[in-house]
Image (cartoon, rainbow, N blue to C red; front, side):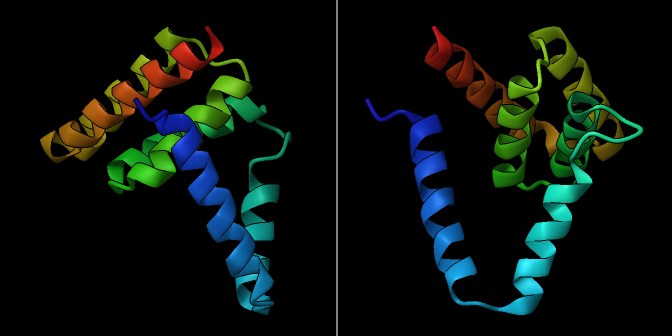
Length: 116
């Protein structure tokens, strides 16, 4: 059975390498801005990743949801924190977010399984 976490990360890495390799100044600046926005600051990294998770769910971007789930986990987010965050996202975004909530939960479980 394919590992969805590994597949997602491999695809993301491969395509990011291609996009950044195209040497487009605007794309490189957007990637840099994104990286710096989620760095430690007045808010800790975990909080920023959870905020990114809410925005991604409300905007219905499954790739973004996966990215922020994994980043939040690496920053120390616990299942309870992620579920509360996804609850807020669903409240703000409405029932149209529910399919993304399902996929987010499935991906979170895959992250947990990967770590054993």
